[in-house]
Image (cartoon, rainbow, N blue to C red; front, side):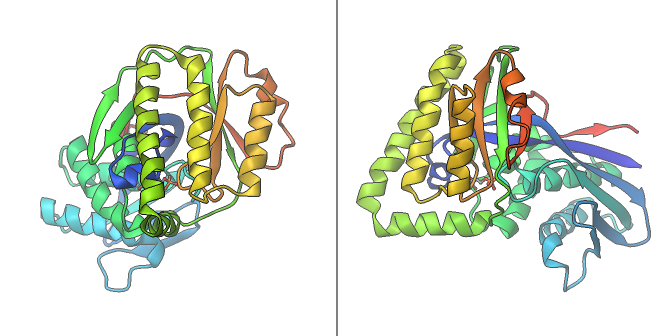
Length: 313
Ligand code: PMV
């Protein structure tokens, strides 16, 4: 049996603007997806969360597994392998919420299948295959999701290239994410934002420019340990996303709650229109525990350095 795990991610700054080649900053966090592969006579993939399985490499692959089929076909071509396998995907990352569940599961699948076929799971190759697969789900992905879950750490990402940020995260800094429970389709949300941009290019051009400046400032603050000052930038970034029509009542409620219990700043993260919001906290996390009973699901997260890797069970 071969197993690989990949982390979840939080986009700290710059989502959506990154689709139009402005920069964004994302970090890998300590929630994981895992793929384990067993010997089998046909290529099968099963999702524990969805409670479904399908055969790959056939014409009418189940819609939910299209990205796995793209990855499988690419790996088959690269490796020349013909053997079947039984891949089981298990994940603790909420689905369609903005924490990179689709990128994390496809990356752990690709990493484990390359290993199963006896190839070195080179991270650049994993990332390249994952990007092609993500196109099936998101239509016009910026590539930030597959990149951050493949390499881990905290990255400054722009137009397909990344800079790894060596950040000395304080031990008492943590990210609290609330899943509003409102599911959305990233591809559809991205398209509606691009349509709005096409309607008002002169106005939104300025918003995108502001977002670019904001992300560059956030990069400086992170590198220079000016963590407390990130709060303003987080809040302004949220405002810019609101101007693109991405907030909802549930999102605003969750943000207000995070601010009420002392977040330095709070914003939606990922595609928006639901999904997760995050707040940045310094100090004792006990206040967060007082949120038990709040309608959304709460995650206490830490930035992590490692991306996808093999695990031995
Ligand atoms: O909601 P998620 O995790 O799929 O994040 C999408 C991030 C966007 O910037 C909105 C789209 C992209 O491809 O970068």
